[in-house]
Amino acid sequence: MNKKGIERNIVVLLFVLVLVVFSFAERDSRKLEKLYTTAQLLQNSSQVLSDVAAELHAGNNANN
Image (cartoon, rainbow, N blue to C red; front, side):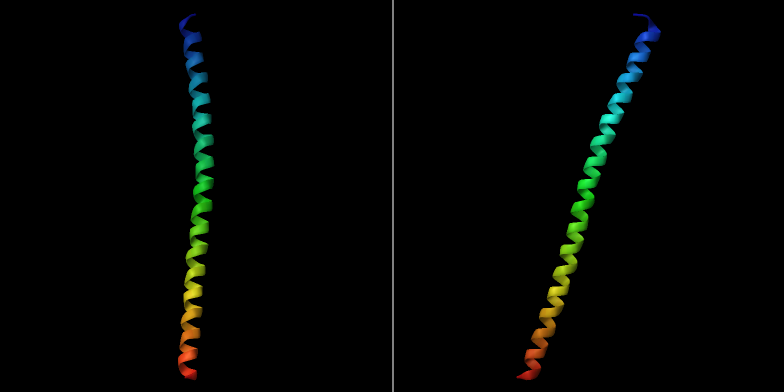
């Protein structure tokens, strides 16, 4: 195989490797985005629940 053929094969191999790496990175990026969104929702819902519990507790103390 001549030098030009070897270079072409290396370029094709590198291109395929880049496509594989970027596909894995995109998949992991989507997973992280879902985890981040879920964590945000859980944090917000727990804050809302604690606020509601504090209001209920304050309301019970006012009635007593």
